[in-house]
Length: 415
Image 1 (cartoon, rainbow, N blue to C red):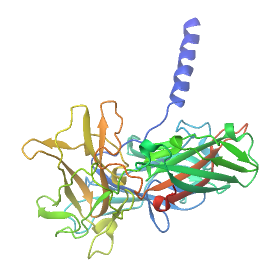
Image 2: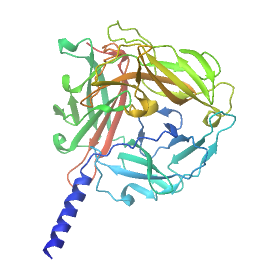
Image 3: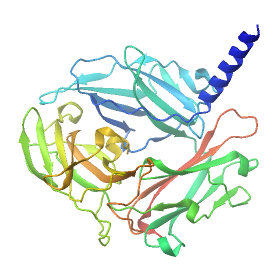
Image 4: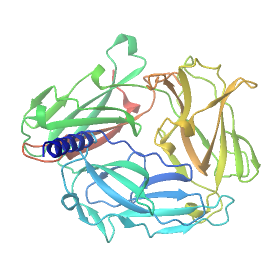
């Protein structure tokens, strides 16, 4: 009896610990590419979606097997720990359903199947705001990959301004996000019930979370932080376009056809010691596009894109990655650059679908922390996109509701 009681207690403690852990996205394997979110009109970077609106998650599978895939949708708290809500409380219908909408590539060297999951659909509808993770499963109910999304309600307005840092040591490097939240109805004890999230350029990995309002004026919550709400400005993203896969396109030096097409980019140089130069970008995003095709979903081909960075070999405690929205700004072995001792540069080959791509070079130190601007530099003039998301959990509530959202571009930065 005593041993049984101990076992039950240990099981409960283990379950509680598991529920309190932050859940991360599951990176896609090498044969799954070009994961995108789209609404009725646009391709989304990091998907922040209004409750009740339609969106889709699309992806390509490059094995040629026409595998069956399924999906599940899970609700999370502000800190990405599992929420207490049951499926029936945040979904109308049932998930764990098969993705029926797919089609095979046509007239491409790289064979692939393009899958498209629309939400809501006949089987499922999201009925609560909050943080969600959409997981794509295989026949064995194993998670192939997962992606985070945020669903919001328009129960408050969010006004945002971008300022230069008041810290003189970073005045030319950082951008500060200040904002004001105007709630439609009264909010109980906002210091305890309101949480916020600020995202730069759709990169959830370096977001700033849980700033408290500095003061309130009626139903207005004021956030006038400086260092606590500051981001390194970074630099404009680098880019290339290979919509014409059989020729030299934007920043494509040359091409070759082997098993599939190969596109060779011009070599990049560090910009950390250069002056800032305005260079329009799409803030890390990418767009699939191809010339002379009717349906880019299945007629755009894949190419092995060769990246080159002219820089001396870094110390052993640092590594370089090619990142952007095309890989969710993840830093892992699939996008880690290798040093070529003969050419004295870093190189990487990535298989990417035809299109227009923003990318940058990210440096990770031995503490697994990104050294921002190590290669690109940091400039307060850089044009960046910022999202501000507001969460609310009233007393007695069992989940974090998203009550407000807005985004702004830093082109009109204030002193």
